[in-house]
Length: 121
Image 1 (cartoon, helix red, strand yellow):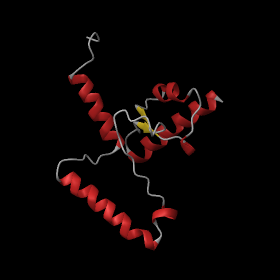
Image 2 (cartoon, rainbow, N blue to C red; image 1 turned 45 degrees about the horizontal axis):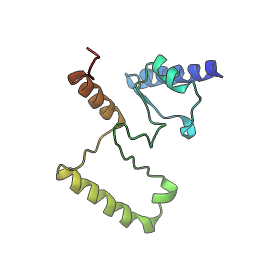
Image 3 (cartoon, rainbow, N blue to C red; image 1 turned 90 degrees about the vertical axis):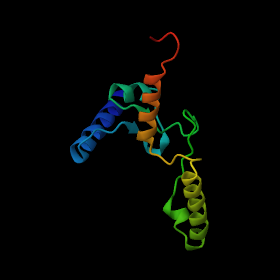
Image 4 (cartoon, rainbow, N blue to C red; image 1 turned 30 degrees about the vertical axis):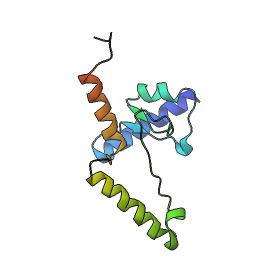
């Protein structure tokens, strides 16, 4: 099983690199599930973060999942628009950072490089 999971992670990274010119830095497991080996295998395969731990909040993040079978209903569109307008307003006020997981990972890595934890240098 661990061997199969490693092969899947490596194959996904290879395909992404071939088709997009860059290897992925993050991973979201199918069905947001993982084995006890997944975190170690991700690191071994070059992934820098996982999106499986959506309630970990390290750093504090709020993901918004937009599933078409839910938000795609016409009577829900006005509510989605209202919520997204509020997000845009808060971003424009400087109160909110709208980002991607990869940009958050890079920001965290740069922050750690600028201010390493005591005793690590």
